[in-house]
Length: 241
Image (cartoon, rainbow, N blue to C red; front, side, top):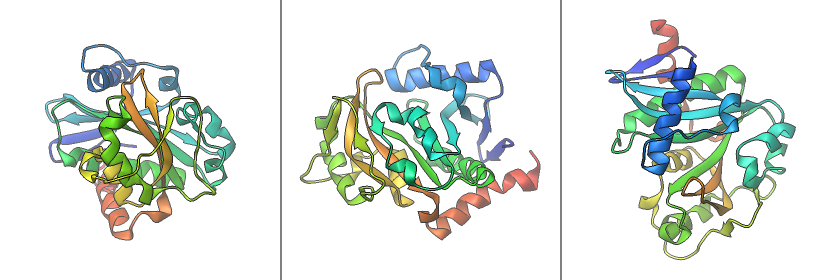
């Protein structure tokens, strides 16, 4: 994928150890609220997407890995927390998206649109049929997020593809009065495009988050939204940047 510029931001893939180190530093700041390096063994397997401000500052990042065969899903990051054996039945290559974060204090929706546009280029090139990953709520306390989590029952995955719990840190999604205002921006974006979620969440104490498994079949993305995202990605081909 070539770098793609839109407005004040440019999105590109990491090309060096320095690029990766910048992403790891931003992830630590975003997830832990302090300087440091968020690193794990999955970084070496992934491509890393960077969004930079016109001044050169890194303002957002995420990482991705493409699985050509459903049998490979057991080696994904998400498989540490979820049993993905049913999801593996969904045909075609799958892309796992993870470690999405923004520089603390930045809430510009243009950044997320640009990332989705870049991801569309990658999805189309690889023939990906589904995106999936752990979508996080900041702070590892399910009670704090109960109202937002309660809204997810209507987006539950079909039984034939639904992830199953794995490990003692799993919990059933709460019921009761829901409030979608508490959903993280990435999860809201996923749901608007037709994503499914697991019927349970997982407490990740190491990352100080609560997350749900999110899966988005590419074919379910509304046509108008897909066209808009491809229009963003098409700038790669028309500008040659």
